[in-house]
Length: 305
Ligand code: CP
Image (cartoon, rainbow, N blue to C red; front, side, top):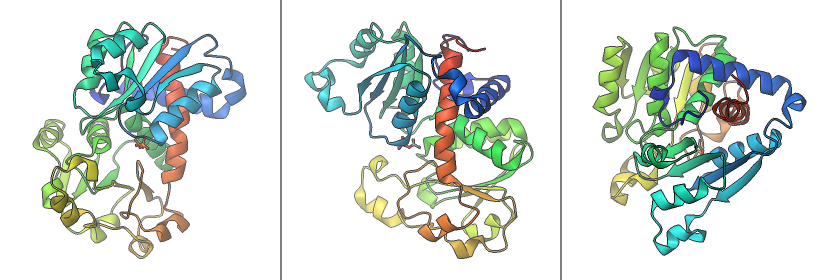
């Protein structure tokens, strides 16, 4: 993984996943031991789209390992505003940093950046395409809560069309013989390219309209927000924005090991009464982003192997 960009979860093997999860666990258990690991390293975070968790957990990860951060969270404050191209921005920032973490609204932009950059690029989300570091923290959280990644039943709820966290997680979990229930409005169903991938891996998946029954069969319920920013027509967004709302009553009679995950931010799709149940695990999931990103940075910079 040394010096290798992380653009799509597809770029990494099952062995890589376990390596990252193993190091995430080590960083979690021994934070003091690694507080100078990134001494002298500079990491750039270039966020062309809004973020709370991804940017701040990357920055927290760098600071917990003694590294330094440069970058922007508002492209309006950078020379992008003056018309600078993405290529020129990347080639310039690569002079200042050992690693670039980038979020961008255009699908494929992270791959393109990695092809021109002399330093590794980590894709922190490119449009509706991929969010591989979220996927790795999701894998960590699933393994933490289920003690395995194998043979799990996972229900995905919400925006399966534009949900980049869903796309990455579906790809990664395909290695582990899962059963998927896919719950979404008709207009936000999982794209065919991902269904073809599931077919290639002989993954069992079922598209369903009603989530109440499948929640009872699930080990993980992975809820996502319907993303207003992905709709060109606001009327279409209004039609589906509250199509699925998980509440505490729906969790009665579910499996003892069931955990509800969400990449966050949440709008209405998980009622706040779920927060008080022992099924809610989305804030712990957000914390796992720090340990997982510590591991990803350390491995890409070749400071661990
Ligand atoms: N999960 C996630 O990507 O959250 P942010 O958009 O806040 O970074």
